Image (tube, rainbow, N blue to C red):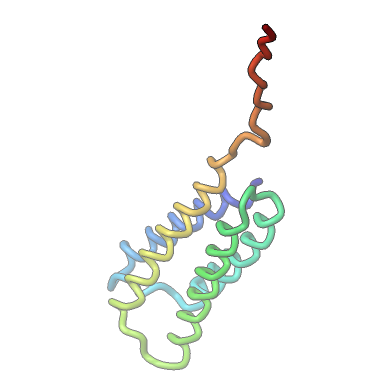
Length: 121
């Protein structure tokens, strides 16, 4: 249950780092790789308590995308503009999906339907 609120804060931190880095999107590769690994780990923990598993699966994929971005920046020169958009949209999506998982708690079972009364003549 605590993994999703932590992912909300982590996603907002990614958005903050994307916007306020100089130049925009120039986040440290180690921070980016750690953020991706943490998102993957938290998605695995959140999968055990989520009502539906698509939330944690999507966040795990987004964490893998962040890891791939960090590796891509180590191997070659990725444009800061592309990194900015990956960080911004990835952080927003991680936060929204984790917040959805926190707030979405449907009723466990609908109340049983009552049969109409029988009328005998």
